[in-house]
Image (cartoon, rainbow, N blue to C red; front, top):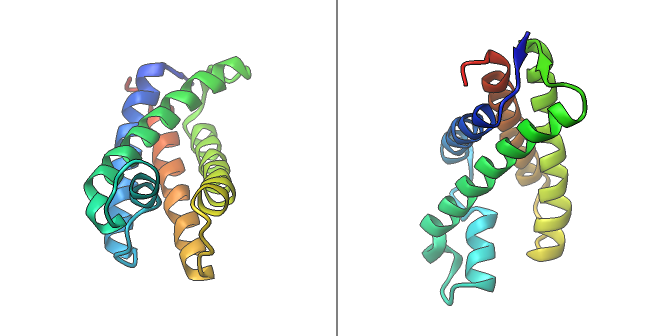
Length: 143
């Protein structure tokens, strides 16, 4: 069993976001990420394609914050010391929760998008990858 730490959540959030982003870039449809759409719609003044880098930075920030949040939530819920497999299971569940929140709220409400089923499936896959990696880093107990 390992202790869940905020540092582990920070490192896990960074690593998981990088891995997720690699998968997004390799398997995605080359469209701007929702964070670039958000930036161009509410902050910037150009097309979403002009906000790709800013959107990626924003996405990395979200991923780090989400990793830290899980590292804070788990001990508060009584799971401060867990096995690797349990941490990965929590990570997968958390990735699914992040997907539901991102798809239901951010994509549908904030950005008023109506993604195709294939895009939704990819979006889910990328968030589950994030969860697996985050859980693995937290459960490995290196940080």
